[in-house]
Length: 233
Image (cartoon, rainbow, N blue to C red):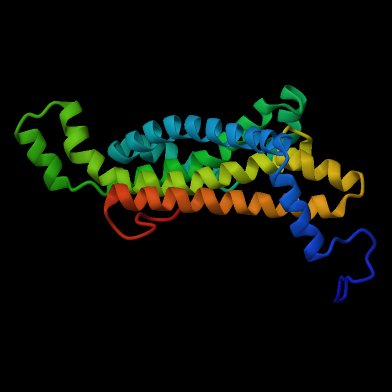
């Protein structure tokens, strides 16, 4: 039974109906194929953002002149939500997996780039001077001096960026009809299946929570430090 100010709203599912429907979805193989679409889009977008953000952030962090040139551009573009380009991207790509990958990439790029840049700037200058005095190669310097400083920041950015990418992959389905959990929720809403709408939303939250926990544990294991080490973007 639904109680509260929304108790008379038609089509509003109760908590028990939502839980039951969420359990039914979990036993449906086609549901996990839908979830797989979101995981593929989020993982692909995060990987692309990791490659671009790590290289660009590392270069900006170690090259003050390049940072001075590009930082204003980053500060202007970073606050713009990825959904702003959704209409143009939808016209170009259609409601496809590629649309989800594109917006997931944009969503994950900025946390990774900013964190890697911060990590590169946090490299001990004395250690860099020592590496130059020892005439270490650029590759050896990156591995032995820069990488230990950047890794905690990189993992923090990856944790934030991947969760944002997953959220965006669901949102693209909800707003533009791209395949995945968001599209399932959209179709359920259009057909008046309130319990499925709420159950799909619950599963989206569960997936995001699980992803964040897995990455947080991974970050802790790799850095041998406290949860959530690294700065926040």
